[in-house]
Length: 220
Image 1 (tube, rainbow, N blue to C red):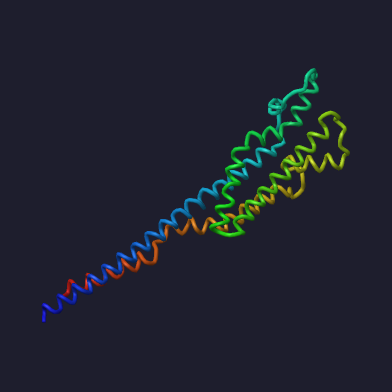
Image 2: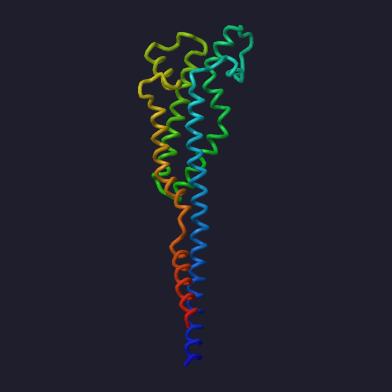
């Protein structure tokens, strides 16, 4: 009788061991995939916070003539004309300095869309839209005023200035757009990042079954 009980216990223990092993394998696969998602989300949300800072630097009204000295000067420019044009070029010079960051940032869009859908892609689109608005305003203003300091009427000048420089417009649309993009991405990424602290269901069940069964065997 005791031998039969021991054989049965051995068979059940083996079955439990196989279940735990298979469950552990699937759990490992899910956790490996989950870990990649978590690492990606953590990186992307950090990039969004950095993007907000980069945009703020681009649009800072505190600008200096020497920031625009990367502009290629024309022959026989006077010093005063060179300084004026360099100052106009400052927003574009800043963007050129950040070009590598923005290329890397926007490259994450397609990976995030593949994993998390159009909502993730839309957050990138919102940032890209703000960048495009900034660049379009900076380029148009630069070209309009390059040869003629009075090349824009007051209304157009005010529009471009408010788009380029942060804080000039009431309820600054570009800043609000960036903040809303971050909120969208936070809604996707933060729950995934926080989930890394929770053990998987199969791991919890495996531990529970092993504990109950093998403690039960100790009583035989």
